[in-house]
Amino acid sequence: GENVEQHPSTLSVQEGDSAVIKCTYSDSASNYFPWYKQELGKGPQLIIDIRSNVGEKKDQRIAVTLNKTAKHFSLHITETQPEDSAVYFCAATGGGGADGLTFGKGTHLIIQP
Amino acid sequence: EAQVTQNPRYLITVTGKKLTVTCSQNMNHEYMSWYRQDPGLGLRQIYYSMNVEVTDKGDVPEGYKVSRKEKRNFPLILESPSPNQTSLYFCASSPSRGVLGDTQYFGPGTRLTVL
Image (cartoon, rainbow over all chains, first blue to last red; front, side, top):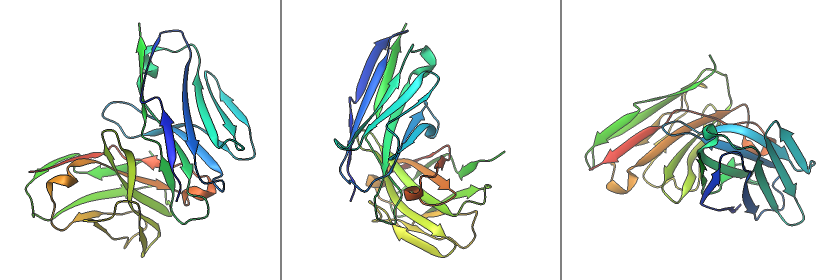
């Protein structure tokens, strides 16, 4: 099955700086890669996603890049703000299987004032 | 408002006492799923359902049961809970399974403690 590795597990950046979270996946058949943000006491919420026929996607301060050859994808957050502090999860589809998403272990992003 | 609801939000119980965590969605989604979240392990899928009366095991199904008698409801059943099932549980739903690239909507979570 699919295996998703996510790094780093904790990331601390100064407010206003950029943050980058990286994920790799194992199943070359995977074709959908969402990113979820989980705030304290809440369930994960989708913030951006990318499909395998696209190399990059941007939504205001958030962007995701995908390198299918290397089987890795990254989340980029620019001009970080205090409300960006949360746990972020990457995920990938299970390829040809009937199951849903396989998640990375999460990155705790801390925005320092 | 489109949402996934779970009940209860918090539960403390003792080993061996059967319990059910309910999950309901009002978006007419076909696909529903249960995850558990543990520190350092991320989200792991317990069971999923692609439609009414269609359920299958995820990555960590041992000790859990589910049923899907109606499209909107997907309860998680622990017949004989044990301390290693202490965890944060999330229900999620999507229009179809993840391989088709549909967003999964998560409930608010149920924090379960088994003593």
